[in-house]
Image (cartoon, rainbow, N blue to C red; front, side):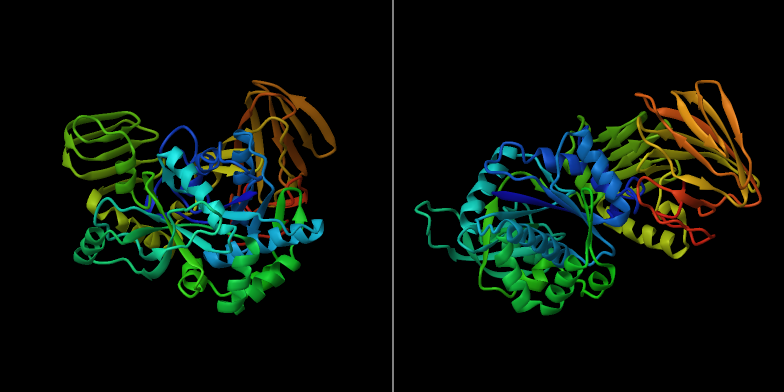
Amino acid sequence: MIIPVILSGGSGSRLWPMSREMNPKQFLSLCGEQTMLQETMTRLEGIKDLAEPIVVCNEDHRFLVAQQMQEIGVEVDKIILEPIGRNTAPAICAAAEYIQGKKSDKNDSGQDVMLILAADHVIQNQVEFHKVVESGYRVAQQGQLITFGVVPDKAETGYGYIKRAGMVEPQSGQKEEAYKVERFVEKPDLETAQKYLDSGEYYWNSGMFMFQANAILQEMELYSQAIYSAVKASVSAGMKDLDFCRLGVDAFTASPSDSIDYAVMEKTDKAVVLPLDANWNDVGAWSALWEVNERDVDGNVLHGDILKHDVTNSYVHSEERMVAVIGMDNCVVVETSDAVLVADKSRSQEVKQIVNQLKSSQREEALLHQRVFRPWGSYETLEETERFKVKRIIVNPGAELSLQMHHHRAEHWVVVRGTAKIICGEKEFIMTEDQSNYIPLGTKHRLENPGVIPLEIIEIQTGSYLGEDDIVRFDDHYGRVDTHCLESDNAESSAE
């Protein structure tokens, strides 16, 4: 079987302000109606001998992954949660250890092969992608470690390259277009990239791989012992919770941070490259989104309410407001509810510098959107001053917030759509549209949606402190940690 392993741990900082640390690009709809993670999953449909996928993501994104898989009807084998980002080598090693553990439980020594994919790539030629994956499956069953090399169509300085050597001798009776890897090379300058392109011997390094779990673990143990030992211990110390597998925090944190390229692929003698010519793009910057989206007669990609005059070769995206642009060429303009980006398209890679400034200033615009997603739904801050805050809260059908209280604020809820089941102190009751309820400071309370449509309420907070960390949880369906005190704001201790 082919076991897809989707790596979904990236932050997508170069696509700020749409991509934020708590809702990065893989969870956004940037190239179609589905999110990039969902497109990665649906792209697999039609591949033969396909097993249920495994997703590796960080702890903060676990409910986003689960919700997006549910939306497209994909059953996952397991969602493996990294307590801290350690690059691709530990993530892949953890998935391989998990797969090997399942085989041991079943006394299964079969020929399962891991297909390692990033959650945020675009591959437009699905037929060719399937063809190369199925070819890779046959080669990987021979014990080879496969990397997919994208056939370059230009001298690109933003990617690493793979130089091929001779073809792999066929062992299965069917000759595949597979080559031994001569070497991996770093991102080149333009002159060197042009030489690579002209030679026909180099491919872009896609970051996609195929190999048997036992094969990659053997090479990991041989070439990156520290990663192998730490991750093996973290899987052993891990806890299974429904569809989630929580890795052991201390052991995983002790693992060195490294890519699978550096940790194994550049050292092993089993590395094989399969050429992939399927209109691949890693969508690493706004300029890449301009490339993969349909452009108008003036070379523009326009999303949202846009008015333009004398604008060419530009990417303009509006989420909340009408945006007017005049007399621009080769530019990027991105508007969200709380930020606007204007940049030269050729310098769009430098957006990361802005994100670094936001982080160093501890500004929330690097971390969160105004609309913040939670396992039960979402909330959006509409207005905030020193003494009051107004939120729009949406609770998914059948979902509920934790049973909680606040030390420093009171709340007033007004139902504007749907039906709410409320616990307030010792009382439990139902509220419908146009009804409201007051929750005094220090009172235990819970909000639940017992209906079949989303519940929408307006929440007015008043008090001396309105931070999201003023919360004490007494019971939580989603297993979130109870703060019981005021702490620095973070994704799991905040917001209902």
